Length: 145
Image 1 (cartoon, rainbow, N blue to C red):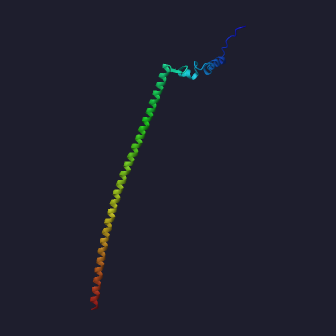
Image 2: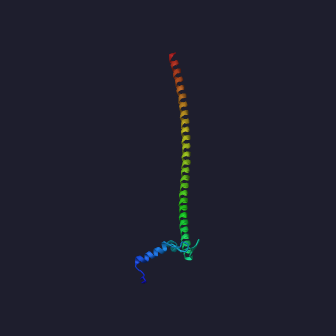
Image 3: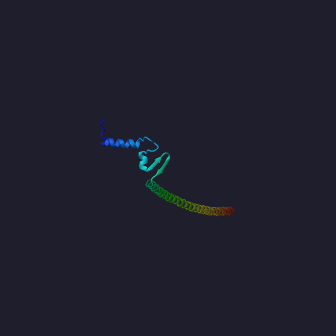
């Protein structure tokens, strides 16, 4: 029998790599491509991460946590600014409402005062009218005699 020459064509090399990475024969001792990329070593049921992978994961997680906390802080600040803005607007509106109620009560007092003056003027005019009528009657009685 003749020994076969190894096939080093591109397709053959990639198929060998994909076969060994994606189709492991012994699942307990073989790794998939994703496990290899992440730096996970699995033997039986034990899973360990390489130190480089763990530092990358932790730095990635801490970076994500930092970004998240920065975003949350920004949202909290914006929320507080918005809340402070609403509080200021609310206080301003309450102040304007108080001013308007004071002005309204002042207007009511002015109206009541004017009404009182007009009523006294009317009473004085009625008294003058009654006095004038009484004077006219007296004059008419004097003219008849």
